[in-house]
Amino acid sequence: MPTHPLSITECAVCNLVQLSQYPPLDFVRPRLPWIRYNEPFAHLDAAVEQLETLVPAGQARVAIGVGPFDAPLLERIAQCGFTCKQLDLFLRLPQEPAIYPYLESIQALLRPDVLAELASIQGASQIVSCRYLLEHSHDPVASLQGLGHLMTHDGLLLIEIPDSSKFLSAQDYSFIWEEHICYFTEHTFRTCALRAGYEIVQFTRYSGTLEDALIFVLRAVRHSPAQKAIHRIGRNSNTFIRYQAGFEKVRQQYRSALQSISARGEKVAIFGAGHQSIMFVNALGLARQISYAIDDAPEKIGYMIPGTSIPIVPSEHLMRDLSIAVCLLGVGPNVEVKIRSKCASYLNRGGRMYTIFPGAGRSTLVDEKG
Image (cartoon, rainbow, N blue to C red; front, side, top):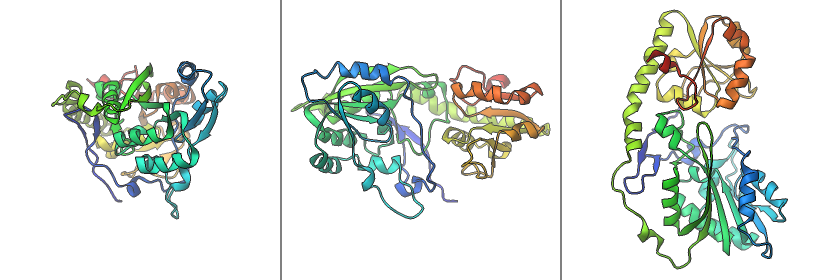
């Protein structure tokens, strides 16, 4: 099985946490057609209400969505009288047998030359929306500068990104994965926008249990040497220093806890075969102590967790195999409630469930042990 190094660093100048080595695009490009991601949208009604106030009613109201997660916002903004369209990026994605380009390939097109050409074909818009793409970019400053070509001279650029502050502070190592190149916070994105030549017109934080959604509305600053205004830090942040220092302790805690369970002849499963469970198992080196990955998505059953020999099986297996004493939950808190209800018989017979997320508001396995 081919592998690629995965490590993170923090820029000593701007404090942006990012992958140290970017994996090649063909390495992370999906080989299966069903690999798609979901992003939050419950906050978009409020976001559109705020956005609408920035565009006077007398102006031409045209909005364009850049990527696959902009449709929910465009649907809402269309109800406010905007003419909405989708940027025609997908026809420019590579076409190869048994390869299904997705975000890793879309981000490579967010560059000034490509977007300038598309703008000449599709026209400029008053509002450009780019949700949950910039964290995938190999060059976020160039991506922001490229998106400027899609805007009218007084246009607005809406950027939505996940905030990394909570998982960094909680020392959660499941959030790092090869699909996300950049791990923004409010501070580091502000610096990035400034470097790209924008001013921030509006900023809103929408709170989430594990990570917040950050929405920035930007306007290009004409004839402004923005890069010279950046405050140079010159050292790593305390949060990142603690994040680095805590990794080995967390890894040893989990290894010790799972080895104790195995020594009693009991098994451990992990619920959820998504990227956070995959990262949790591989980063902490737990593959030998975990017997199953539980997931009811039919397209995942029969596969194995990447990098391991852990089989993916349906949730009924959790109730059938009486030797599974512990089930780690690699799902969000909103889904966890449903799983606990669905697997009530497992819990009633003495099975234990623990979230893998230290910021989820429930005890983790190592909290109990420590």
